[in-house]
Length: 540
Image 1 (tube, rainbow, N blue to C red):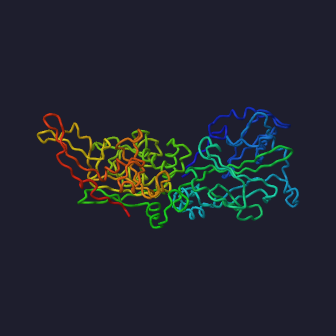
Image 2: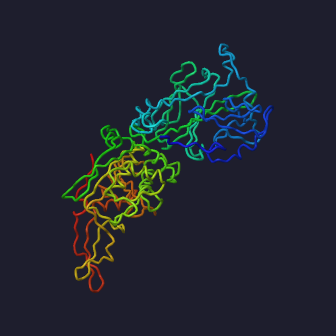
Image 3: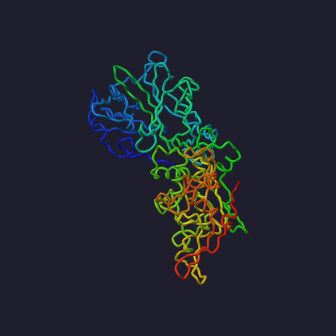
């Protein structure tokens, strides 16, 4: 089904305002106040049409916007009308060109007729062809999903042959509501003959008359987002510059790329990538350390609107754009967004046994249904417990391209005060003192391992990182946890970010028995050193 909505008419950023059209200055033959219409006749482009005085609505030429000495406004969606800009009636331009005359044909303004994203070819090369939204038999409007740091080819058809000596083309990528070059959410570049390492760029692969095959390069630290794609044709004449902008209707989804050596989530083990990125099903383990059982789980990261839901979570995350390409920051934020207490995230936790108004956590068998409901209602889904939170986080990470797995720790401690111990208090008569017993102990607890390098830590602490989306304790004032280097946890190095002491206590806390004496003092009566973290199980 279609997953994209038409923007409100008005200005081109979708806000439905029309004030940017109020300062147009009429040229000869153009009447002030004529409406600006938008045509959706060509599925690949939104094309501005000026209604000329004679009322003819069939002119399909793009608007000419003269910007004088300052040819381009980077801070707005095109077309942008500023005071003093002249908007010319397309009817004043030559409407017919003799294609047999090469001189006349070469003087005709180059116009993009269509763009083919070559979705089937590109998604196969980028390991994204399993996404339902990319498949023609799943949706009438397939989308392009690619991974950063890896080139992809598009095919552009013009109204005449492209001449690199005369035609100035500029490719434009924009992300977010207010794309800005200063935030690197507005990126533009010209066609080049070279591929500059780790940079945005494009080069012509092949030309066949009016058709160009263009290879586009994205940097390996590109922001993970849905990027709008545009092509600008720049025409300079008489000391003025006209820009003809092609707006592609559909965005380009750009994800993390664990197959790219320069990506933060790179993993050179193809078997691991098949399991921890591409596998849609698995098992989540539960029970006790003496009686381990498993529950089948459909992660479903490629299903229906799951990727759109993941992108929506990033959009509402309030992450600064400068960390939208950083897997550490993204995963940390996702551990908060999967639960509901702080920011109305995906899932409401419930351990009461009363699940009125929702579903028992035991009834869920996969993540896709949860994410679909959240994406549809924009309301937290009821209810989940640790294995459900973990399953959902695994799905989101895999959908975004971050290798992830669900991990079960048997006999798991919950340290509430940062003491890195599980403390149990007793009265002098041997009865438990529940007033002081804030720590808890679980037969099992499920969290996640995610794979990434850690440029923020000393060398050697990359690889698997622990992250926990179950709302237990707050970290930096929010119910989030991790990512914490598993190497650091194993070595008992607890000062490194993030949340090392809490995760260390889950797997390695001492169980300490305290007895309150009649004079009010407390005595350490016993210490058990091997009762926490008896077994850790995952799909490997």
